[in-house]
Image (tube, rainbow, N blue to C red):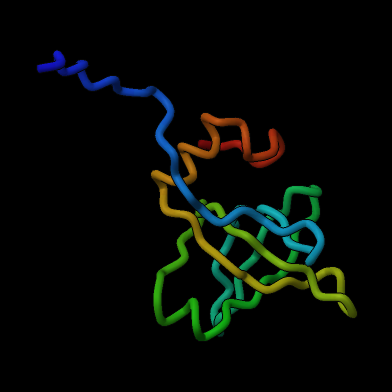
Length: 109
């Protein structure tokens, strides 16, 4: 009967979270200020502050608060506006920050 090997724990947990798709014009952003009427002021990773629109699909599923890490997609015809595509939980944002995935300009975690 072969001896059982002890369970090896690995430091790096494999987490599958959504990352911004650069080809589609998506980037990281931090929620700065809630403006009302499903609008939010977002500080994007390129250093520009934009007005973001929260679609009903996201508005009904999850609450967005100031300081949340977001994925936003820029508008083609108005580059000073964007749509919110995804919101990370606090735990996901901290893990992305530890792994170095969040740009230094947005790293507040």
